[in-house]
Length: 593
Image 1 (cartoon, rainbow, N blue to C red):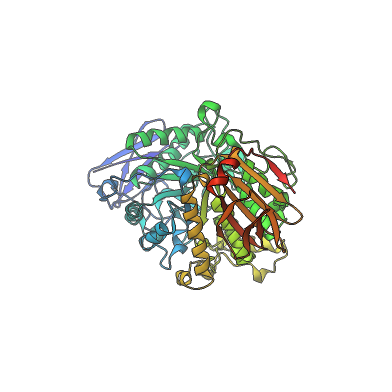
Image 2: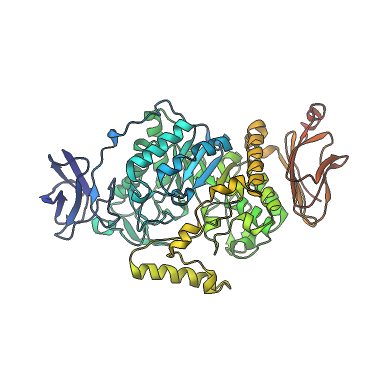
């Protein structure tokens, strides 16, 4: 027996097609239709016929065995045998997050094959695995951000039980699992929500077209749709948290913002389950309201991505100053991001041609994620180039050094830790020929306008683009990849060893830099982080009596002025016990030499 329910407020007639039999549904109020079928159960294929039309997949389908256009499948979440009853995720502020894409993380590209690499991630020092969206989307492969069946795990990754096996195995390995979810738009094919009800509104527009309806007529059930989706992933699949894609595209003029509602409901679920559950937002607004407590007018999301840190570090290392990097490029911008998180906390942005952001006053650094690579910053480059493809390995080591010693929660992108040779390119597998052609031509035209030739732009629809993006795990035993992997392991171990690197206290950070000679040093209690991005050796001032804990080259040593540092070198030093007390009274100051 199965109870079928669907929200369809504007339909005159709704029928259920289940295992080939058509049954009329009963209106039960607020736009909901119901039917109870005694013969239905797990495995039953079904769809809904609206006003006599062809059967459509359930908007809340838990499984789409035949893809986005096929019938839905009834599943029973209670049948899976979990073994993680005693699991509790570690605290996010002290975590190390690892972002991965299931389809390219292993050669097989499945949940089950990814399980074989969980021990490697644990031994590396990762605490939280963040997987890119796994909801059902058009085609066999893609990034997942074009999802249309938000409640159904992608069939090509293994489907419902395989995803549960992955999460269960991660917990048994000691790893928390975060899921990237997309609530701001839907994919271009297989999205039947408009035929069911007002899930979208013409009152607001986003880069993807009409905004989701968060504040118009019938918005309560639309908001319920997304909140129920979040609760399902956390409750039925045991995820430890969600990463919310592009929350700046949530246009909500209501008194209670959607993010606040979502956070409240997740908090209630965490109390009910007795588990730590977190929400992490991607926001382009530089607005601390996203993470401020509700009592201070915020939405109380647990953490958010910090693109300013990435942009400042990337442009300082690569020299890129085009596009949104035109707001960056100076060592001083990197210094500002380390001290204040947002380089643009209300100041004028020439890229945006307006003032942007606001200061974060009073928030700790561990409310923000810091990274030099992620799926966007790698995959949205024309050839999917990683930082190790753009700069020398020594500069890539500097990047890693800053990520792992910054006052933020560090996040790595798959393969970054061994300077993977494989790119991460934009790939799709749209089956609609016209859509496929439009995606390929759009990608080509976008980059040709920036000076690339058509032949240099990988075709998203070409299967080779997808396969080219798969990690080559054999590299970790080869040089220079093994050396880079060792560097990351040492940095993560260092982060674990010294609490100053995880306390997130921005008030105790003191930064000195030299714009002309391109070096920068950061004081964090007894620790000094120093890097020389210039072409010549320099003496970087610092307190005397320090020993070098870690350095990216042998061109670094302590001396009477602080540190003598060779070009393209990163180091972390520590005051000896006798000097640490005297230096403890040093006030936070910013110096530009």
